[in-house]
Amino acid sequence: MTEHPGGSRNTERSGRRELPDTADTEALGRELAADLRAGDLVILDGPLGAGKTALTRGIGAGLGVTGRVSSPTFIIARQHAPGGDGRPGLIHVDAYRLADANGAATLDDLDALDLDTDLADSVVVVEWGEGVAERLTDRHLLVRLRRDDESDTRHAVWEWVST
Ligand SMILES: Nc1ncnc2c1ncn2[C@@H]1O[C@H](COP(=O)(O)OP(=O)(O)OP(=O)(O)O)[C@@H](O)[C@H]1O
Ligand SMILES: [Mg+2]
Image (tube, rainbow, N blue to C red; front, side, top):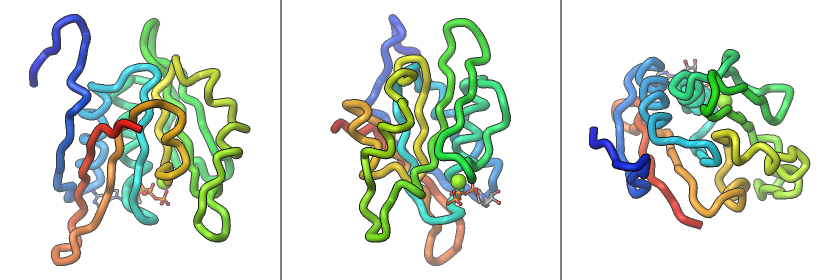
């Protein structure tokens, strides 16, 4: 892995990874977290049960935030405090319920979370965030979690996207 002098990073990074087991999904999250800084946005795309929360758990572990990352079932967003001075916190959002009956996302609901106040201090991870959360930043890490049709094995593809 290349170190980037002066703390800059290569935001063009993208990739693909086979994920045979939950532990592989979490491990990918830990790896992706190494490139994440306060203010960054991660959008997770994938069907029900794809592993979005498992990936977020890995990101949380990689960032070293406090508290167990679990599915925000009854709330829309859960905040995890930084694990130390100068480190980012984690805001874990489940935008599933923000979609209306037609599947169209409502941006107003994200405003109600007052996320902007903490964006600069935290990494924000949004499950079901595609089409909902992009406007929060001018670029984001998009991770798509999928199952291979043939093998039923899961994989992830990811890329930094400018908006
Ligand atoms: N790579 C993987 N291989 C096999 N099982 C996995 C993998 N990743 C996650 N799982 C399992 O799939 C189940 C669902 O995972 P998870 O809750 O992370 O999905 P999700 O995308 O967040 O679901 P939801 O759409 O309900 O939010 C869990 O039991 C988890 O352990
Ligand atoms: Mg989930």
